Structure formats: C-alpha cells, structure tokens
Image (cartoon, rainbow over all chains, first blue to last red):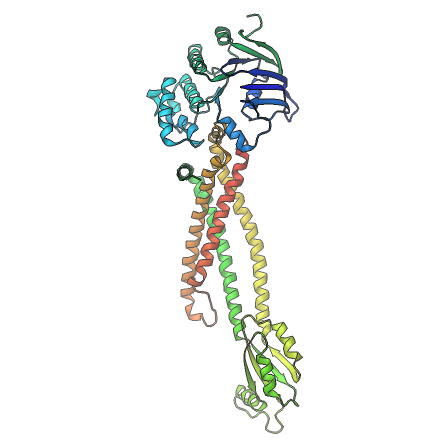
Length: 228
Length: 290
C-alpha cells in the first residue's frame, strides 16, 4: 500500500527533515508514527499526500511512485487518501453535512450518490442528529468526527491522521480511536502520527519511531517508547 | 465542462460575490472607471478618424497645364484613369478667370492684359486615394505644369490622430496596468479569505480547474458588470452629446450612437472579460500550490 525507500527531504532552508527513511505499510495495517516534535512525522505525511516533494528516494502509494506526478495526477492520488488534521480544518460557514458533502462535490460525485453516502458516514461517526448545524456549535471531539467523516466519505484506501487527538481530552480521544479502529477493521489502511503515549501503549499496534528525520524503530506490536 | 459542474461553479461564484460584496463592488467600480476611460478614448479616436475620412472626400486636387498644351481631352482621360480619382472636371483658362473674378466680387482682374491663367483640371479623390502616389503619377503625365493640393489640413489631421492614438494608447496601457493591479489585489483578498476552503478542496482531490472555475467566473462576472456600467454611462452620455451638438453637425461632424455602439459594446465587454478573467487567474496562482 505504502512504500518508502531511502526517502529524504531537505527543505530550502537546509533543514534535513527526513533522512533515508525506508518502510513498507501493507494494506489494512494500522501504524502509529511516533517521535518528538520535529522528528519528521508531519513531513512524512505531507510527502504521502504530495504536499511536499522528496529531495531523493522513492515513495509509492498503491504501487505508484508519487515523487513524479503531474498536477492532475496529484488530485487523483489524493482521492484515494483521506486526511485527518489536528485542527480539523472545517469550513466554518458550511454545516456538518455540507462540510462532508463538499469533499464529494469537489471530485465531481453525482448528487444522487452524495446524499445517502454522507448520511451513512455521519451515522458511523455518530453525528446524524448534528447534520445541519455549523461546526462552531460542536465540541472539539465532534468537530474531529466531522473531519473524520469528511476523510472517509470518498472511501479512501489509505487514511492519514496527523495528531488527530492532539486537541482532545482523553475520553474524547478514545472515542476517536474507537472510530479509527472500526474504520481500519473495514479494510482502510491507517497511518497515524501522534504524541499520545497512552493511546499508542493501549492499542499495541505497529509503531514506527522517527528521530531527527531518521527511522529509529519499527515494532510490529509495540508501545510509544522502546521499553514498553 | 458538465452542465451540473457549471451550475455548481456559478452558484459558488455568486455566493463569493455576495459574501465579499464590498470588495466585489470595489473591483467592479475600478473596472468601470478603467473601461470608461478606454471607451472615451475609443469615441475620440473613432470621431477623429470619421472627421478625417469626410475631409478626404472633400479634397480637390487642381492640376495646371503648361501654356502650350493642346491635348486637354487626352490628358483628362489619362487623369480619369488614375487610381484614387473620383471625378475630373476641365476648367479652361477663361472659366478660371471667371471663377477668380467671382471670388473678388466680379472685379475685372485682367482688363488690361491677357488672361495669364493656365488651363486646369479639378480632381476629386476617393477615400482610398494615396495622395503622394497620385501626385507622382499626375506629374509624370506630359503637359502637366503644377499641382495644387489641399492635403495639408488632412495631413495635419492624420498626424493629430496618430499623436492622439499614441498618447491615448500609452495612457490606456498605464490605466490598464493600474486597473489590473487593483483588480488582482481585490480578487486576491477574496481568494485569501477562502484560502482554507481552497486548501481543503485541494487536499481532498479537487483539480486545479475545479478550484479555479468559481473564482474565474467571479472575476468574469465582475468584469462584465463593470464593463456594462461603463458602457451604459458612455452610450447615454454620447447620445446626449450628439443630440446637443446636432446643430453644429456641419462644422463638427460626429458619428451617431448607432454607428459606434457595436464597436464600443464589443470592445468594452471583451476588455471587461479580460480584466476580470485574467485578474482572477493571476490572483489564484499562489493559492493553488497546495
């Protein structure tokens, strides 16, 4: 599903964000990407969705090397990847329903497909009764669920989550994790960058640790730190 | 583009215009001012051109023959055959004297001496006549002594038109740049206000074209509205001016509103389209790099 070979990213200001990172994520896996701030987690995710271009190395999604894509191909790549953000990135003037349906409209989905699928996804994340309210009327956890609904509504093969629980309290964080686990069980591959030690230790999934741009650990079922 | 997509883009564009109505009005106002100046320039140059064309039609070229010439009829035929000549009238030395005496209140100018005037031809020219070429051809005919041509005024007009055109074009270019700059900045503000939306669109897989269309339509609508307003002001203003000056038509010939409307409409609407569309295109470039 996701392969990186000697993936290196050096920014224009000379900062080495990723240094020859090689890893493989298989279809249906749930992977935690851990490491201190500045370790390269977000850069890695940004390379996967082609917000950044690697300096060297190979990165492929679904057997396609995405380092060299045309603009239009980038759009099509992103249609098979869902993204969840720490700050939700919801559109404040659109309702919950519109925020989710928007993701389908912009890729040209037919109107008759959009409505039932949005309601199905909102039901899955438990927000069916909030479909027509604005994001400002929702709690942080609920907003993150809208973000999650938007990320999965186009049925992505791969779901990237960048600190999805970073702004949430522990109970709400677990609610989001339960949802992510449920989505993963349905076959979606998930790569989640996180600082949340409790969640990583609690779920005992595959953990990839980065330190100053280098891959320092890849444990099939591990905790946040090496000793756990 | 699918019709459904078009309506989606149009809906988003109209929504954008309403949401950012103050900025939209500013951009529209600036386009109106710019295009009003452009239209004014068009009206002035079109009328100067019209005036010069009319003047050409009234120009006469007088060809004087050498005293010894006897084949006036043959020369007249040769003159008629020249390109750019509309009509040829023969004026004998006697007729010339009569006409000259009329100009001086029927005083007998040549009582005491022989009529010194030569035989002559009066030539009227077509609009397409090339005066310099014609002068060259006429001079080449044997028996021609001198050519008097009232072209100085028309030449002066042509130079004046050229000067007005050059000055106007420079002024228009600068005005166009200023309008484009302000339109780009205004639209950029609306794009900036919606950068988050653009970022999300791009991240969920919208193509650049999909993101761009609503903004392009927004710009085009603003451009056309601005052009429409400028057009309305110019057409009404010009019609009023022509009406007020109708009594001076003989001295100050003006194109009628009907004669200029099509050119004005097409030019202004295309410029509005350009300012709005190109302005949006430039404004968006930076925000599409997600």
